[in-house]
Length: 428
Image 1 (spheres, rainbow, N blue to C red):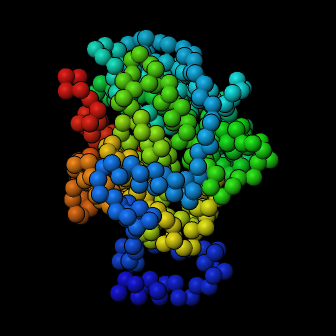
Image 2 (cartoon, rainbow, N blue to C red):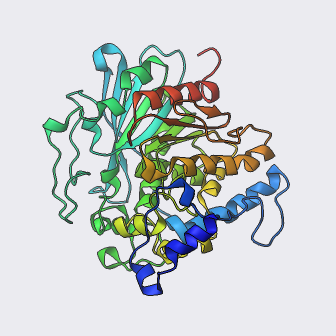
Image 3 (cartoon, rainbow, N blue to C red):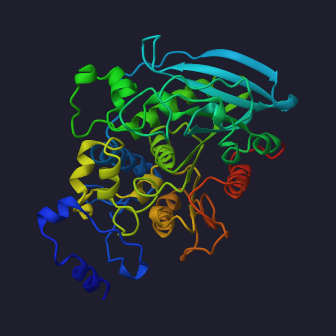
């Protein structure tokens, strides 16, 4: 019946019309059947039978996501040492030590580079686990701390006209603090490291000219990208790994217990960063939607066509080949989740954020379960999507909370509890 309904919806389409628009569906009854690729079957058809053979399948899947979705991260990119610009051991009224750390991304001192903002709890008896994640509008927006500097260049969420001189202002200081409950994170025994994603690459089509990809491209700003070269999400993911390069050297941080976290497009980035860089101990994707945790083949909410049309710079060029035939994509997002095995992954949705397809995000975790079972680990562990504000799962965990697309105090409480189970020492 669903297949017939789906056929009726698309019966009037011709190839030209299909290339121009894909209908948006937010009716669960109208989701047609689909078949997912099996993460435990090699391209040759041979099955994955144990954790050892998974490592080979994992390499194969990484290559496929690189070639068809996010683009391949170039090899041989520079990894220069970071510089601690400032330290305040009595930040936030004495609760924390604040560090501002400059992380160069190229061989040029002129940039681009990351300014990493780090808060570590004072009084910790040993190195602490840390949450690492991008912010959307600059480090100064996550805190009212007046000593956190404004970002230097283009600021996100301003008109994306291609102009690169949208500047941060003091008026925005602390404007995103509700999404970054720093005091609560510190009180729970964790550190926080955050960085502005626009430092790596401005988020508009053509932003690569003044970002990381333009700085390292062989052709400079005249470079023509191959179909499988990295998009902006790939560049942002690489920036997270460079921030981690510093954190593993910080004497107050336990580099073995760094959780990478991201919301929305930055949740997509966190999943791809975790998949590529196994040093991340745990991955959290908050409402990451299409191109993140949500299944691409499930026709609900944002589609591959819609995301490639709205944000043509996020993914590699070849991903656009699947705008109108997503069933031909050799991978799907449950396999992106599985690439993080055996490390813990938390995926979260919001009830009102239908665009991100909450059920599709849950199903990605569910279909990654068999990979975690290879390691004897409990996955999401339930057959059906849970109710609102009812988290479920083990090493793979999920919740859908009430409310809209956002990163909230409720979300953070679940993530802190999850990290208590997987990252903190029993005596800490």
